[in-house]
Image 1 (cartoon, one colour):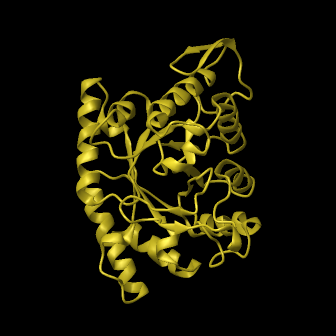
Image 2 (cartoon, rainbow, N blue to C red):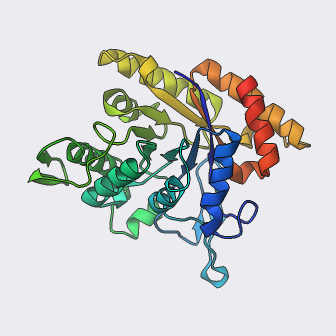
Length: 305
């Protein structure tokens, strides 16, 4: 599978754009540099203190200093799709357990249609239990609810009348419009630790690929890839047909002393991950804080590695 290199949009934008209205123009410049895709994830509700497991993404969000930390992923991708022609879009991750299945299926197929098949729907259970509790969703159910929603969406993306019966969702002979341009709907990528639970089996059964946790270390990534490969072999699927995406998050590196050192560290990390089976790489801008010129240098170095 051909390697790809993308960028994850920042949680806050001043380094790259003054407002969220300017993000699409910034992404146009990323497309000109030659990046393959752009990634964005979501929180639907914020709590005042959010402690990310693994120490990545900790934040304090207070109303007395209100700011826009995150835009709606699908709305932002729609604005970007109208300004770009080749760049793909990856949600990493969307939280289907907190979405109405019919609305999500319709939004995703609309984005697939207007982007001409450039949208990849990355999903997962999320890590901030409090935002599910606030919406009346028991956190312990969010993993199973995510699967229920995604199976319902896949039925709605099929031609003709759709019917589905799951644990929480039940419908018969309905039609969702618009129909996606991609046969079967946008490719689904499942995110999270694939060492335990049903994640590896889901990827093998019906997903185009797997998304590692942003804070995952090398051992977790490598073992998850192996676990997914084993599940693929169980169901008769070639593991080479699965995409594996990892963030080049510099949390485990020594603090770079310069941009050159940061680029060298990213290249070394990418080489190690590629040897483990990673096919798609993402540069999280919040960690890199690089301008367009240096992002171009980093992309060139990664492609040459």
